[in-house]
Image (cartoon, rainbow, N blue to C red; front, side, top):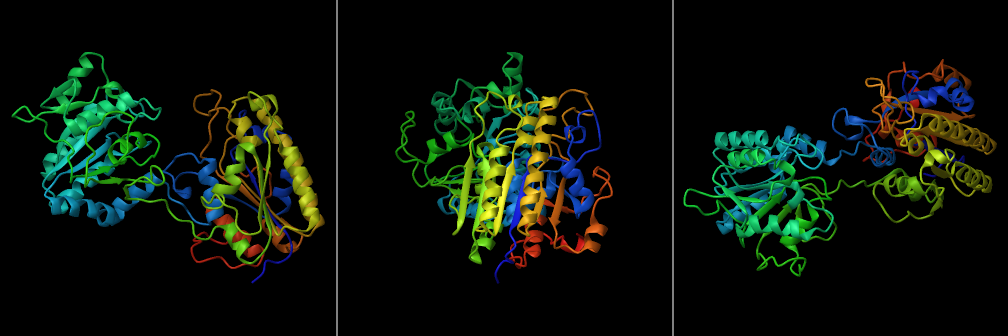
Length: 531
C-alpha cells in the first residue's frame, strides 16, 4: 500500500508543554496568534509526555530522547528502571535467562555468585529493589555462595544514608538465609567515569584481591565508624569485610559469576572493563580471571564481552521505516541541538538512514547561551522545509524546533517568550506551505519546559523540563468541516483539557491520516476517530 500523495509533516515543538496561565508560563504570555488559531480551528487534543506514559518512573519529567523515541516507535518504550522494576512485579525477572545462566554457571563450577552495584534507592544508576530481587532469585534457586559488593551512594541519596541501606540489605539477607556482604566502598572509587583508574584499581583490589586500607567484620559498623571521621558514603574507600578467622568473606575468583546490577551505563564501564577485557592495561590487576561469567544489567557499551540481562529494547518498525517500506522519500530536519533526536531517536535508535531518507542539519547559532539568540536557527529550518515542500519530492517530513526547550533551559523568561514567538511565526509559514500542497501538518511536542519557567511551589526560576502534557494538533484542509468543528479546542488554553492519549499515539494516528496500516509492533492507538 502506498502513502496517499499528500505530504505529511510532523513538527515537534521541543519543550512546548501545556499548563495553566501563570506568570512563569512563557507560552501563555507570548503572542502566539498562529498556534492560537490552529488550536481553535483544527482538531486538537493533549497527550501525556512524562512518567509511565513514556516508559519513565511515575512522576518523572519527560526528556527529548525519550519523547522522540516514543513518538517514532508508536509504542511506549520502557526505560531501564521501570522496565526492570516491572519485570519484578510480573515475575519475568525471576525467569531471566541471563540470570539463570549465571546461576547455572556457579552451580556447575561449585563457585561463587557476586552481586555488585550501587546499593541505594537513588533510582538514577541503580535500585536497591533490584538487588533485593536478585537475592530473592538466588534463594529460590538455592544458590549457596552469594556475596554482595555494596557500592555506597551519597550523591543521589543523603550523604550518610549508606548505613540505612546496608541495614535493609542485612535484614533481607538474614530473612532469606542467602548472601553475605563481602565489600563496601563509595561510588567515588568504583563508579568513576573520568579515567581516574587509580580509583578503579582500589575497588578492584578489594573485590578481587581482598586488599584494602580499611577492614571490618560488620559492614554497618564499619560505615558508621567512618561517619565519625567525617568520611561519608560517596568517599568511603573500598573496604573488605572479614570473617571470624580474619580473612576476606569472599573475593572474585576464576570460575565465578558476577552480576553488576547498575542499570545506567556510564559509571559501571571502567570497573567492568577491568574484569572482562583480556588485554586490560590501565593498571596492574594481576592475573586475568578466566572462566568468569560477567553479567551486566543493561548494555554498558557495545562489544564488551559480557552477558546482558536487559538488552536494549528493539524498535522493529518505527514510523520512518513504515514510510521507507512503501518506497516513499522522507526528510528529517533539525538544528544541531536536536538533530540526533529527529534522526537517531525518532528512528528507534538507528544510526543509518532508511532507504530514501534524507537528513538535513541546520547549524545552531554559535553563542554562549541561547537566550542571547532566542530565535536560534528556526528561520533556516523553516526556509529549507518550505523549499523542500515545494519540490514535491518528499511524502513525509519530520522536523524539530528547538527554541522553547533550549532557551527555556537558560531560565531567562523574557528570552523564552521571544523564543516561543519566533517558533509561532515559523509555524505560520509552515502552515501556509503545507496548505499550498494539500498536505497534512501534525504538531506536537516531546515534553514540557517553556510553560513552567517559574516553579509554582517555590516561586523561583526554573530551568528544567516539566511533567506537563503536550499539544497534538492535526491541520488538514481535507478534514471535513464537521470533524474540524467538533474536535477543535474552544479556547487556546488547553490546560483544562484531559489528555486523550500518549506520545506513542502520534505515529499510529499519522499513519491513519495518510492511509497506511499500523505495523503490529506499534501498540499506540490511532486517535483519528477522536479527531
